[in-house]
Length: 71
Figure 1 (cartoon, rainbow, N blue to C red):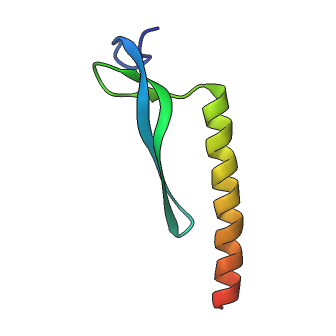
Figure 2 (figure 1 turned 120 degrees about the vertical axis):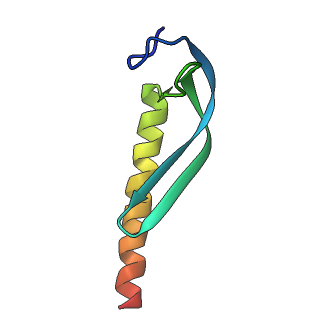
Figure 3 (figure 1 turned 45 degrees about the vertical axis):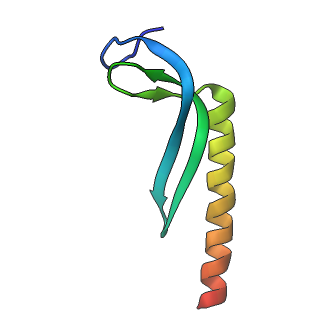
């Protein structure tokens, strides 16, 4: 597989996923991905994307609950 951005060679590895959202910063380390050896762009497979999305939903819910308690 080649990178969609730079056409570099993709290799299996692990990377971090970071999102700054709704008053919190979520960092997930060691996420399996295909990583471009030229530009570093990561590509996550469907399973990892689903897990990341579920974590974000859970943190959104907990963050909202925490904010309601603090008010």
